[in-house]
Length: 110
Image (cartoon, rainbow, N blue to C red; front, side, top):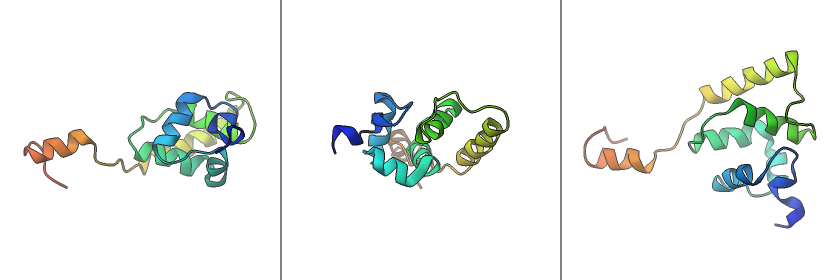
């Protein structure tokens, strides 16, 4: 990956978001642009990242080349609907804690 294809080249996305995306296998701006905001953000949620509406819409705006706080009114409301739908279909992976608790019998094994 070249520096000009780093996720941080996408407006509004800094090193923390690049690290989060790298943790789910999304390592280039090209990959993120091709999959789009909803698919990319869903992967973060499924990996156990906490849902943040501002992070989500900053991503959407960034992929459009717009400032993070550019969404207003009906557009922002529509983004909230999309964000809530992403949260509703999140299927987080089993964490190390979940596996350990299952192993000692505190919770049922999956």
